[in-house]
Length: 587
Ligand SMILES: Cc1cc2nc3c(=O)[nH]c(=O)nc-3n(C[C@H](O)[C@H](O)[C@H](O)COP(=O)(O)O)c2cc1C
Ligand code: SF4
Ligand code: SF4
Ligand code: SF4
Image (cartoon, rainbow, N blue to C red; front, side, top):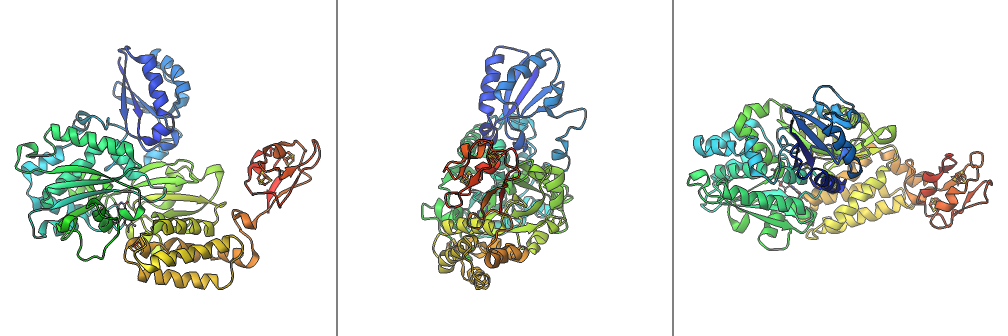
């Protein structure tokens, strides 16, 4: 019986060693007709890559952590007709320790990722691909399409959560013959990688969704705007566009109809602000990527002043399902106001970092504990940052909150595009606010004074507080600046830049006060406010700390209690990690 070996080959898998694993598979199996090797995207379990599915008699056995050094043993077992049960992370016949990562997921937008070969249009078609486009072109008029999308309740997945159907309606109704489509794959939030994984793992799905949108609004040309830091996504997208054109799914007279739609890929230079749609449009036009005032909205005046519809990668990726199954099938998932599923990237101090797709309405706790497997080192979750630099930190006592646009906004954060960064008790919330502010200061385009200068002043205050030089006036001053920046900024970047500060002030004010009043960092993170000390009773004089310290601050004789020179110590923490006797503490 022939076995298919399907290896996860997105950027995350390659970074974890999938290329070496694949080379080893070829070395052992090329010419062996008992095995067929295929490439696929990432099934979302980034924390266990490299991942290989073994498909035999229609059953799928998923192996994790299959680095190149393990391939020989793996192949030997398969060749004997057996499996290495301990290495299987998902078993077709019974639950495994990893099953809970998948159990609560519902895959609509990401159903093909980690299943099909993203570089092979036949695989996409065999999985039901381009059937929605065919249905639209052969049986639906433009308004029917928009009605289905409206019925689905799909809201834009790029951050603002605006109704996709309404947006398409505005662009359709906008006067003018020449219209454009944009797919926003700029994805600049630190910790977010959903769009990269989707474009790498199922580019045809996004092309199909966007092409259906183009038919609905009456656009002839479309632009994928993808950051240049995503070279594999760009490569697979270009390949997919060529394949779709060759098969008549894109380009002139699609599927023999009089509907034509040409796609281009534009590589962004990695500026976070270029994800904002008016800045993105300027960038496509060859201008500097700076936002402009809205209205006019792109639906009436977008690229070169023509009506333009812009949606996020995930928004388009949902469309083929909605058309194939009907808007009602999509809207049966989710909450009253936020329908369907949402893709999230789990990052930070979580055991199972990866990409998930879950029904709206799931709680943060379910994501942390049931899917994410809890916090690393048996730690406790302190907060989750949702929505990247525009979002906020949600403390653990609010983690029973069902995730939808309204509930998350009520916490002071935003659903955003789907980045979730988890923090444990060792995370300093003032330092987190400082980190996000440093990001927005770097990324501000400089057009508005409050965003350009105000965020810089806020960053200076946060740097002062984390350096132990904060004063009583700093918190009211921060709040004043937050208000002014929100009011005085033109685009979402500036308007939301204060959110990480506002949410940490709202939920973790005691940490700010400890830094300012007691000159202490409760999480023991801020270097200016901590010291490393050897506990004499515990020290065995093993000398490991002295050998590890890069600056010679830890010293002592063998079998004698060691000491740390506070003046020399850079607070790198290497000695504490090295000490096997827990004899080094942070105060
Ligand atoms: C600073 C900033 C960065 C943004 N970055 C992105 C991005 O990377 N991807 C994205 O889809 N939307 C981003 N947006 C939101 C877009 O302006 C726009 O709302 C979105 O692309 C619309 O698509 P949707 O309706 O499908 O969500 C950003 C907005 C701002 C203010
Ligand atoms: S708010 Fe900031 S990023 Fe947006 S236009 Fe103004 S200066 Fe530029
Ligand atoms: S590593 Fe720990 S036990 Fe060893 S000398 Fe340093 S403090 Fe003492
Ligand atoms: S914290 Fe770093 S610099 Fe300080 S004593 Fe330990 S190893 Fe040396």
